Length: 620
Ligand code: ADP
Ligand code: MG
Image (cartoon, rainbow, N blue to C red; front, side):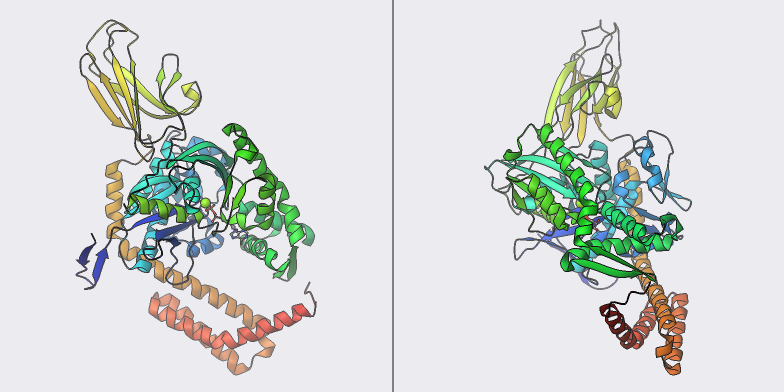
């Protein structure tokens, strides 16, 4: 039932559809996918302008309070590291205590307001929660997809790592809400990845799979047992500080050693340039066997064999994690039927080889784009939830046990880990003191026996129990876990009927009222934000163009006529004036004109560089 509405401002007809999108909200990159109605296959949605499917999970806060998200923000990492936020997913649902050890590894400021509460990020003089920042990324994905599909998007499925706890899932859901999305389901990333390969779509077949996910900054291995639409997480393991970014670091170190240059002698810009060059080398070396490029005036090279040697210790670390996960699952290596490859870093042939050699008896699934797999699977789940495949019902399981504190600070588990969701369980308790009229109920999540070692989710007091001798009141505590793994707790004194229910919102979640207020705010600023983003992107591009033109002129002065030089100078002046005018059309026109004029020279220079390189002259 598609609804049609007419936008009175623009006069256009807007089709509001019941489309449900799948979103991979990643640490390094994020993307959005839908089920293609014609082909019945999931597809990742690209940007209408540059055809990129992937949006870097990077945000830049402009001094006036607007955010730039994605490629444009990634460029700001060089110019304004203190205003640019990356890897925000690592902070989602965490208190300052959780992240204090890693604080120094961020370029931006993490603020400790109050130890137990959610961390905030300080940008200029403003504080942002990771939820708000994640919402900005989701808004960007949403608006890109709306532009591409020419229709509004209201509903989504968002993926999270299998080990995410209640607080982190809740935070992800809040971010979705804040971005104006109705989040139908939070799905485990390995579940989505399996679905993308069709695993779990045949109802009655049991299968055991390992999902090997090596992204930009994190590594996750999950072992799943899938049967009758139920995805049971048998074990998870990994390293939250190991990924493709570490491969880049190794390449950088290798180059600096060979050039006899100290990292500390490089400017921030040079460091960033070298890092990007290292990433490029890592991606390209396997197609040509060697990579060679200029870094300033110095030549850097990398061969396939050198890269393999550099990253080998890191890849072996991931194998250790696989061994640990396997031990936890209680299975033998030969019982793993399939290994699903996920994450951009599994494009590296040395990773594929090492992992395949370890899982020697398993079928390797790596035919999909590894950086799209999770989003594609999320789109399949979205399609099922949209009601397009009524034959299937997919269920996840809860990753950690849930329970309450009992006498002596002990954890009494009410819902064990790996229970299917939705799930309901209850147990009766009583008082320990004569005449006790209140009962404090503290809810915890975790596997340890002492509650102090587990994570506290909530605490509430059941008031008004009639005074009775100790041991006589009968308090029934029920845990109701919904399909997203979010918990509701009910307590009822059965003799008197006194009862109380709470939705377990981790102390540091946003209240509904807060979410609503922020949502209203963001809706009223939507158009302004969009205009701002378009303008800022044009300015970034222009500044880059001016810089590279100036560099070109310096390097090629002798080969340019006076007339040509004067014309270039004029075009640069016009573009500089256009930037100052802050008029996006004017900027675009000036940029096109400069580009058009310098294109033939740039091509000539490119030919020269290539022929110099072919002659084997290195410019050292
Ligand atoms: P995340 O799940 O952390 O958001 P991705 O799955 O998108 O991240 O993986 C990003 C990583 O993949 C980056 O480190 C990037 O350099 C790496 N990567 C992407 N393409 C390639 C490639 N062709 N070869 C090697 N590494 C790649
Ligand atoms: Mg990922």
